[in-house]
Length: 456
Figure 1 (cartoon, rainbow, N blue to C red):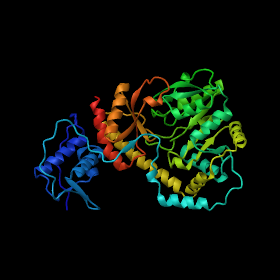
Figure 2 (cartoon, rainbow, N blue to C red; figure 1 turned 90 degrees about the vertical axis):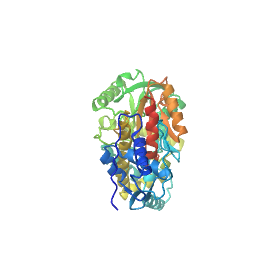
Figure 3 (cartoon, rainbow, N blue to C red; figure 1 turned 45 degrees about the vertical axis):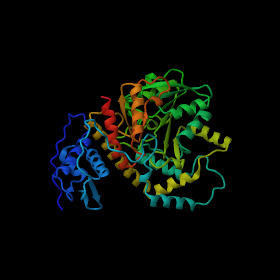
């Protein structure tokens, strides 16, 4: 059956979200007989192209009409007007009503797209890892094959050319920050941390007797000149500043490592989601620019799952030696099981395939968000890389109220306030898009758009 032409006009100047306008128009057409039972509708992609809107708009409208019973999907054959419409069109309030969310949607940050892992590859990697004989003693630096796999990964995906020698396995970023705080730094040492920044790092440093001082950031990340004198280390996230999302420019990276050499800093580079970039070319890591003063940290938490407990550190020799001595002294070492899984995923090519799939999926999700918000006149920050974006707001009260209203609608979103040690200078929502499913994101965006547009 041929698709039905839809004479729909959307008003981009209206305060009503485009998805609500589209759902209204289709609902009216079905109620008035211009769309009849059994008529096949265009795909969400085709309709989006014809109307000049993002696919999120058409998908949200279809989802709302499906929930109301006006349309239904048939597997492999498209979407149709239902044979029994739910009744005459009721007069709707002029107040925009967002689509109903039937399931709780987590738009927080920090969780990966675990649902995208190929289950067969995952099972195969665990089986192969379990075939390895038990170790008679722990590998304090990590399994040699894991260190080699990470060296190859860093070359392919981060442009960091190292052999396996300077690569140490870690139990994840928090675990290795604890090791650095205890073994490399001394109680009372001052460490500069981005403000706003990663509060778990702040907690680790303070818990181990370090003095944490704040260094301001801007659209290009950490400001080297904002780092106070006298610090022993600087913690930063140059690939995608957490949480604002800025990418540190090449010139600023050079300025940072030059000052580190001059003032005797250790720079801790947290590359927590460095593999996730979209329309921009990768910039050289700080470790590639200055391997003598930079400790490079990475993790599988954002590209696979945090349950593996597998990360890595690339550090100057004296730093690596100190960490290994600490492990010998305390009898601690990163678990081998997660390392073996990563090795097998890499050996079979599954890790590379997953990363390509992950980038493609998150790139499309990022486009859903930016296109939807652009249609609504909402600006975002931090969309060049990573798996979250930021929408700035005018006040702390507005941030709290939007988070509350979102939660009432079944959405969990993060706020900027909790990422500050001192009084927040910026206010806004931090919106993650990797933890939920694509379908959940599509259903959530019209709701979130409506809430944001109400703020003016």
